[in-house]
Image (cartoon, rainbow, N blue to C red; front, top):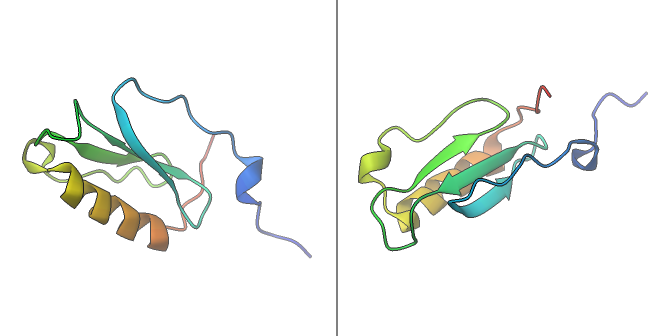
Length: 82
């Protein structure tokens, strides 16, 4: 019996204009890292599956945001609800 839905069954959400990086999680959801540019200190991340997001986007540089988003994507098993 198959209980897991493959990641390919979920539709990719619309890409925000300020999208810097998009990760897919082990659960098949997506996380967006957004910000004005890769040299800005105002990047943040948001999960489409579990709803988690960065704690303090006004203090996040892309190199830190990328690492945190990738770590969460590797562990998050939440699936998209839409």
